[in-house]
Image (cartoon, rainbow, N blue to C red; front, side):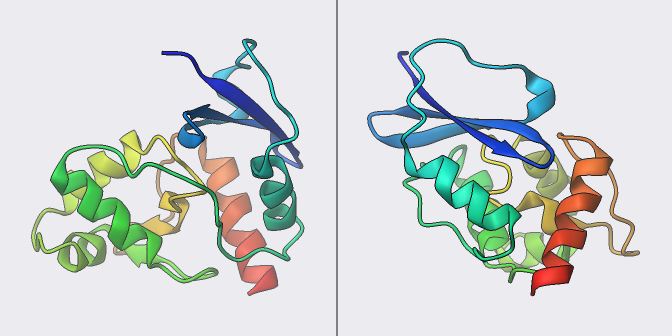
Length: 152
C-alpha cells in the first residue's frame, strides 16, 4: 500500500491522516508515532482538525472509508450519529446498530476504530457515564469530551 499522509498540529500533538486514492483510511494519534513517507500538508484534514480543536467545526466533511466487517460498519455508522458534545453508552450504540446486547463487541469495535475523532468513538462511554479507556489515552478522551462540552 502506498499512503499519502497529512499531519495536523493540535493542542494535543500531531495527528496524522493516511490517505489512499484520496480517501482517509487511518488516523494516527500523536502517541502512535509519525508517518514519514510522502507527506502532503496541504490536504483538508489539517484545516478541519484545526477548526475542530478551536471549536468552530462540529462535524467533518472528509472522504473516509468506513472500515471493517458489516457489524463494525454498522457500529461506526451509529457512532457517527452521536451529536457533537453528547455521549452514548456502548449498549446504546449496539442497539442503534441493530445488535442489542452486543455492547462488548461494540466496545471492541471502538478500540479498533482506525478513524478516531472522524468517527467519534471518544463520545462512547460506559453506561455508568464513566469515560473509560481510549486508544489515544484517557487524557485525550477527556480533553475531547471537555472541548465539545465547551463549544456545543
